[in-house]
Image 1 (spheres, rainbow, N blue to C red):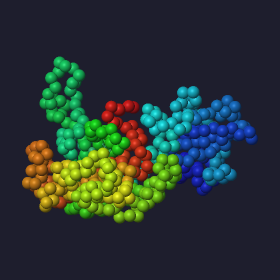
Image 2: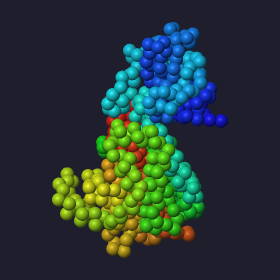
Image 3: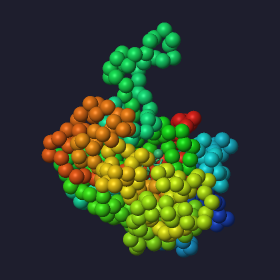
Image 4: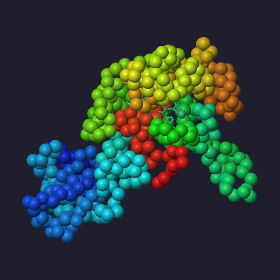
Length: 460
Ligand code: ATP
Ligand code: MN
């Protein structure tokens, strides 16, 4: 049986059928002809369902004429073909029941055209706007595509811990998790007295634990919340975000790149096919040219160049950058965007980065200077994926850990993967929110996650 929702009621095949619609009123207009139009949305589609409420309905004067934006309603009626432009159907109401009123004097979502900055202060009500409804649906579709893509390829979905004693990225941007009362000066805070008897943190990546499962079961992916206490107040960084991390045993860096490229293309294709109305809205109201650019990405092979080649391109670009470009320095987002937007006009995969600027677990190249890292850069966003082939050689990995200031003893279990049945393996991390930004054209990462956490801000 088809679901009785606005999405299905708007389809021509529903004409003649009885429907019960439960949702929220977007607008009410009264016609001189003795009836009112109600625009109803229930989240199932971008477009609203137009409802015709005749003045013969018993609560027309008492209720219907008082309905305003934000009221919740249950409406029963029959779907008819609509004479109006831009919609195939409408619902002629047999009954309209108001479930919850919304006072027009105090309801903040009444007015159209609020700025995104203002809507962040109303994060509990912003999903009732066109934009945030569309973002939620596209985000949902992306999550579904992520699972579909990996499940269809036989990857196992693995849940890695959120509380962890290890610093995977070695960058030290971690949130400490503690039950010690550090506000009470009388307590001497000793790590041994803490809940786990040692310092623990919120995870910055599930990769290390993910590797243990890949090195037993072949192909796995994790998909969960990730936390970084980096004080970067940018439009592309959150303190809490969602990351997808596939890891594949026996894969090398090239296979890793192939996986990343087909993964991104699958997400784009699904969003364009499954979220047509929402994507059309983003195209018209958020980012002109969005759909064409996404189609371009779909139909193009991603460029692949080494970090060293990228540095040469940037140095010879004739551009003035805020941050200097020099071999050995990390690329800034302005550099990444120049490569993807101006130079290649499309996604580009950079590989073989200097070992100093990448994590300890990435495989050292024979030059002794670079590691088998790869970043996927896309227009408007810069880095969307970071990955690598992992170091599978025990001695080299131990030396790299020491170089990064980590104690190999602490990672004995991780090193065991190299001692027993070790294999080459590779994987990457995709930030879900950056992906949602890329697909929707939304400029600020705070607007593609329901409740953003950023430095100095954890409201709701
Ligand atoms: P950046 O240089 O942009 O800070 P990173 O090199 O720290 O990124 P990785 O450690 O490679 O990123 O993480 C993998 C992916 O996770 C990134 O490609 C990005 O999509 C996402 N990501 C990383 N940090 C954040 C963050 N603070 N907020 C949102 N997404 C993030
Ligand atoms: Mn970072």
